[in-house]
Structures are given as C-alpha cells and as structure tokens.
Image (cartoon, rainbow, N blue to C red; front, top):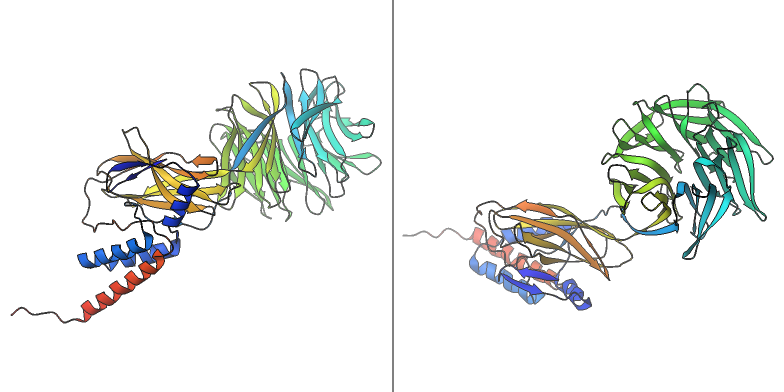
Length: 551
C-alpha cells in the first residue's frame, strides 16, 4: 500500500499488516458525525492570530504524536444499508442440456436440493448437495418433459415435486417415499407445461397450473384425493401462474393473461380476480409471495419497457415500481421473501447475458451481478434460508449445465461523490456497505490525477460497523481533474468501489493553512477541548477590551 504526504510531496510505501492497521486505529480518531459537523467549524473559526494557530497545532500534536498532513479525521455516519453478497458458485450437474426449468429448496440443515429437466437424457431429476458433493437422482423418465419443475420439503421431511409430462399431456405430482418416487397424474395440462407447487401451513400440497384448454386451475390434496377448481376460464390462455398461501392459508395466484398481469385469491365466498398491471405485455414470468402480514407481492417482467417490475397490494389496489430497467432485465425470474419480509429476486438480463440478483432494503432495491461467466441465468429458482441468505439455481447456457449460487454477506465498499471541492482540496466519500465476516475493516481511498499512472493510497481509518466515511485531501493542483475510489481491507479480503472523478477550480480563496487536519488518538479529544476553551476565553477578552486610541 502507498500514500502521499501532500505537504512534503513524497510517496511513502506501507506494507499492510496488523501493525499498520493498529497504527491507523491509534492515529485516526473517528468523530461522530454530529460532533464533526458542529464542533470542528467552531474550533477552526476561533483561531484569530498566528500565535493562536500555532498554539492549537502544538496542543493537538502533543496529543497525537504524529500528523498526517492533508488528512481529515474520519466521519462515520449511522444508517448502514443492507449488504450485497459474496457469491459461491458451483456446478451441480455438469453436461450438455442439463439444468432447465429449475426450482430450489433447502432442508432443515440448510442443504440445497434442485429439481430440473435434463434434456439430454429426457428425465426430470433432483440434485442434492451432501456436504461438499452434489448427487443427482432421476425423478421421472426417460420420456418427454417440458415446462416448470418444482420442489418442496414437507414439515415431516418428505420431498415433493411437480412437473409436466409432455407425452401424457398431464400435470404430475410426485413424492419420495421409502421405496422411491410415487407419482400421480393430477389433470390434463397445457402444452407449455405451466405449473407451480406450494404447501399450506399443514404441509398439504397444492398446484396452480394452466389446463389443457388454457384456463387457470387450482388443485389441492385433501389427504385422500385431488380436488380441482377452475379459477379463470374467461382468459384465453393463463400463462406463468404462481401460487402462495397467506397466513390464513388462503391461496393467492399471480398469472399473465390477455396481455396483462392478473391476480386471483380464494376467500370464503369463492375466487376473486383483479388486474394488477394493465400495461400491455406486463406480467411475463410472474411470481407471487405473501409476507408475514398477509400482504401479497408480485415480481414480473414487462416486455413493453424491458424491465423487472414489482407490485405490492395496498388494500385498495396495487403499487407498482421498476426494479431493474438496464439491459432487458427480468427474464426467467424467481422470487422469495425471507424471514425479515424482504423480497429477493433472481433473474436473467438478456442484453448482457448474466444472472442478476435484487434484494429489497430500507434504502430501496439493491442489485448486483451474480454470474457473468458466459451466458448464465436461464430458468432461475431462488429460496432464502432461515438466516435470510439466498440460494439460486439456474442454467448455464454456455456450458449447458446446472449451476448453483450461494450468497453470503461479504466485505463491500462503494465510492460516493466528492464534495466541498475548491482549487486545492476536496472531500472524498465512501461507504462501507458490509463488513462480511469481519469485526473491523480498514478503509481509505486511492487517488490520482487524470493523466498519471500511479495511484496514491490515502488511509482513512478503521470501522467496526457499516456506514459512510469521508476524507479531506489537500495540497492538490488547481484546475486539475482527479480520480479516486474507496477501498476496504479486512483480513485477507479486500473490496474497492467504482472510480469517480472531480475537477478542481482554477483559483483558491484565501484560507488559513490546515496543516492541523491530522488523524489523532483518543487523547486528542482533551486537547481539542482545551484548545477550544483557550480560544473562546481569548476571544471574549479581545471583545471586552476597549479600542486603543492612537493619539
């Protein structure tokens, strides 16, 4: 690592180590934002003479023992955002044409299992990870299978699936017993194979699907047989149905029909239907989940604006918003709600050919790319585990195999815009978004003038929680453009934000020399307080003294 002592115009090289981290911890005092914003300007504003300035510098120097010229103490703001994730990607089943129409579930110990179609062998399969190894078994086939596959785990541990048997033209439910898979046909289905499986609070399965005639249908298991409701026969073809139960075990279905996004719910008086998004061609790949309050949420793709969309029921209608409009995003999406009622969505961005992920936070939706190695992200499935971490299944078109991505919170930092720029200085901004598995991270900035090659590292201190941080850099060259990015270091892990730029003005207004802007230890708090009182008393005496007349 390296940094520039701006006052001496020399480049120092620091080997990053525990000692260096401790040095920064000891020398950089983290001011609370409230103290820094109110106290510091008042302290600087009291310096009325050269003697006062020197005295103030001496006080702080005695407390800190070392000065980093051109460096302002770190300001850590409260209110961290929800973390993005560090993704662990594995191949669950290698081969050509394996991994289509995936669905994923995790068992009680967090082990994932994925249902999917293997077109090469003509089978429906289930892949399970046991410790670090993936094993796959055949659920049905060989034969011809198309459309959705689904997997769910009952409260007693029974693994249950549903799929569409193209040769028989039937929607099929299968459960794994001691002797293997026990399958039964439920009803004649539509040729495109739309079907979605969900379990109610008692563990009984139900399936929303498109019937052979294009109608929306709902099948439930009563313990001895399947009963079938025709939910919507007026819609010409009900595509992309998805099913979720609310806390009262009432089924909620989202689906696409007649060119719009539709919703159906069963109550004590029967099925009610509504239009969620009347925009033409909005509602592809619709997925529905119901949160702990009983509020329905729908994620879907709108081909009219080529965007991933989101709709939430508000009691009198639906609130709609755009999650991702970049690169024709939202194909083959899957949707989960975690234990904190946050929406989590996996989806494919067609223009860039990558798998993306979005999570709902108090600051809005946070998006990130999960897999950009080739063309990856078709036929996604997603589930959130008991901790809230995402698990994603998907098809990698480039390699033709089934993939699995596990999200864990990782060290993350991002660059914020520079502020308070003038002819010779600027305040750089960054945000430690997540600490990952670390208890402390050292943060700073890399900076250089545009047109130069080398980056100079400017340490900004240590943080023990997520939040924003800022650093004042001085003695820069007027009328120059600079680039910078935020950096975080913790253990053997590092993260850097995007490169940002700023341009300095051509001339500087008169200002005192801020050689004081140093990083100080805890002992510096007393020095600051003493200095502040000295200047205040001195200012009061000056104001009280009468003007001396010249005779």
